[in-house]
Length: 254
Image 1: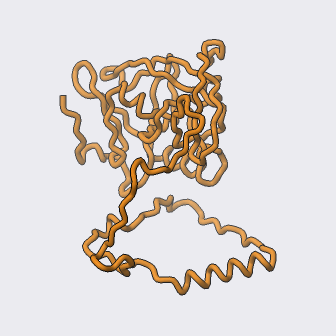
Image 2 (image 1 turned 120 degrees about the vertical axis):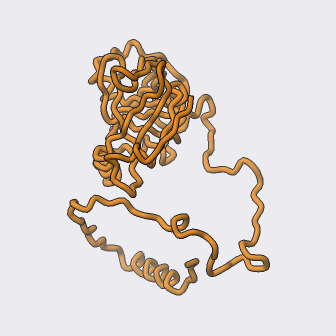
């Protein structure tokens, strides 16, 4: 079976964009919205507030000794693990699998994070460009389209700190290793010159602009908000001025 994406899958998607894939699926008998599909998460997360709204019993949670590490490095306490049937797709083209979810008590803009484990169980292929997830079903290919408006709304909520979902967006499963340290290379790094004989080039020719340029997705109808000016002590302000002066004199890669 071949799963592919084409320009037809872009219908209804505003491009260009950097939006996340936020979908709706059925967990048990509940239609659950605000499910963040996150390939970078090694665990499937069900937030406690959603768990309670689904009417699930805490006594059904299995105790786990593993820990989670949030995006900012803080450890996240796990309430327990629960197995739930998950149904993806439409009535005529759907699939049901049993997925393990770790239940955590964190305030989040999302109800669920569907990580790599859940995606692999669904055998799902995700295209962030098309904001769509496709998966095999008995008679072909099922799909689940993302809600772009919801993606932008809840990302903005997270970004501006109205919900502390950022701590849970990139969760790592630490298993039994409580001394886990992230960010370390798996092997020794070898430094080399970008240009022979020059380890500090002022320019890197030959790289396409779309590779080195970053586009910030904004919502045009939203009113711009100016951050309030912060006041610092004279000593700290002097230090800031010195650092700014250094930056102004520094050489940057164009």
